[in-house]
Image 1 (tube, rainbow, N blue to C red):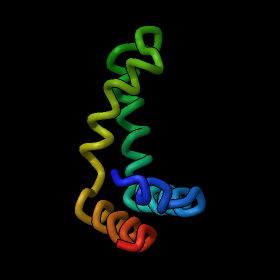
Image 2: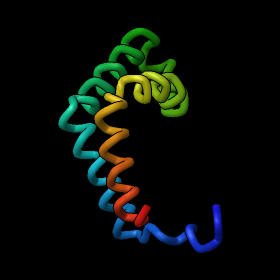
Image 3: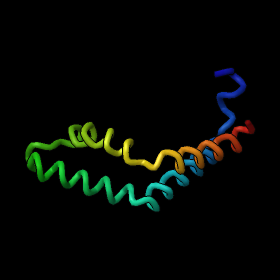
Image 4: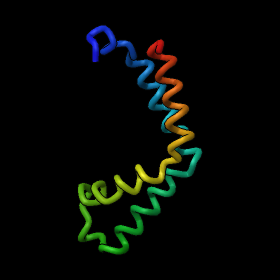
Length: 86
């Protein structure tokens, strides 16, 4: 990345983009879906056999795969482009 492009997005913009993503994930039901996946994994393996690390490792691909990509990606792309001036 060119040196002059590195700091275009300031911390306020980053926080605003994070909040937009959080909002869209909540609206889509993603958070509740991930809670259900977490409960299923714990039930299947037993609470004694699950660590935070193993839970995150197993949930990450499922979580990424369940995001509504076209809607969320496009909206975030537009926001990033408007913030960066591209």
